Figure 1 (cartoon, rainbow, N blue to C red):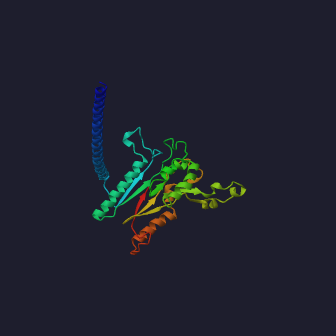
Figure 2 (cartoon, rainbow, N blue to C red):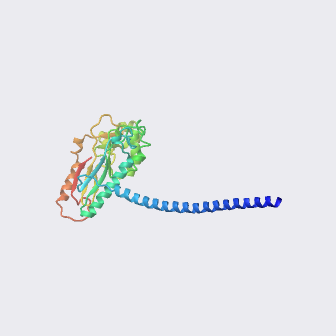
Figure 3 (cartoon, rainbow, N blue to C red):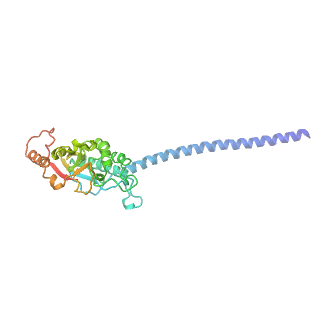
Length: 295
């Protein structure tokens, strides 16, 4: 009787072991199948991702319906520190990242079309000023946090707005950080910087003659700029209107007076002479015809 019970118990355990082995074997087969399925699915997904990326890249190729010419100017003005866009205004919610991307894609589009039709189009990115105030980045006239963002953009030329011209500290920060970042590109045709800003006020300084004071006035940036393109040169001026109460560190010369000054007339006269010159030397900075554009 004992032997029969033990035999039945052994047979029962053997059947249970066989059942467990079968389940274990089926589990291994199922795991292998699922692993294979995941691998195939992942490969398909990777292929889909590659195709998707290609589709995205193709869709990102710009096909703008714009009247392109040989000279194309992309001008940014009066951003007033909204470099992060306008989330509360969806119709104008574009940030500086969008601007940077738009400029790069537009430039690529123009370059590709130049290769296809053999033309020589150029694209210039210009900042027309008034980037101060507007948001917490520069509401109080402090440009410390805003200037690094602005100077990170690939500007071809910049000019001064009246909002920047109010604050002496902002102008000093611009002198120290913005102008060195864009040498020869910050254009102030009628804004003069007082070189004696850091000098002490004593009896000697107070007795200086008026003409000596005038000699200490120099352009805040550059009076003009020549943008050299593929087949053209753009002459750039940057004028600030005759604003009230600018910073005491600068002088804003009325535009009507500036255009009568010798340096301004000399530039235009020099250009006219070079237009009539048959010299084909490519090293001459003024050998191409100049398109005059005020910003």
